[in-house]
Image (cartoon, rainbow, N blue to C red; front, side, top):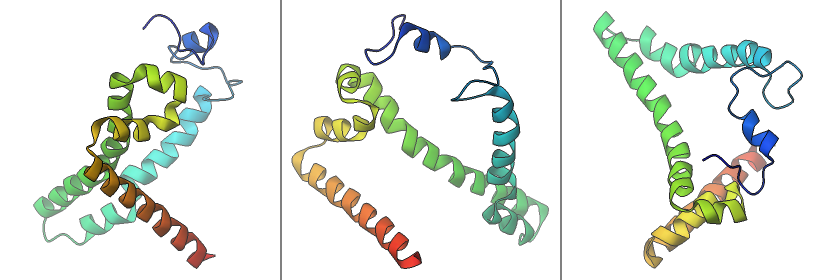
Length: 141
């Protein structure tokens, strides 16, 4: 795509294709990305309790390696579950997303692709997940 979406200027669009961002960049300064994300990434991928516990409780080196691979697979799976619907919605319904906004990707995808019964089930599951999250927040408070 050579022209920017309707909600973006040409200068903003061209800025997305530069790897290095100056330290004054408000969205993603390169130095902040290198120093800040590396610490978070190290914790998330290497020092998380689920991975460390699996490795330390293994019977042998082979079991430890297998447990680490399983933990890595379990950590990567949610990324695909969260990103893939947005990518599919962007490729199938790019005009509607440009008009409605990117936060509407999942609702547009659900309305256009799911049959009525499955749509109702997905909406019920979404509401149940929201209620569960709010319940956890209120209980912890």
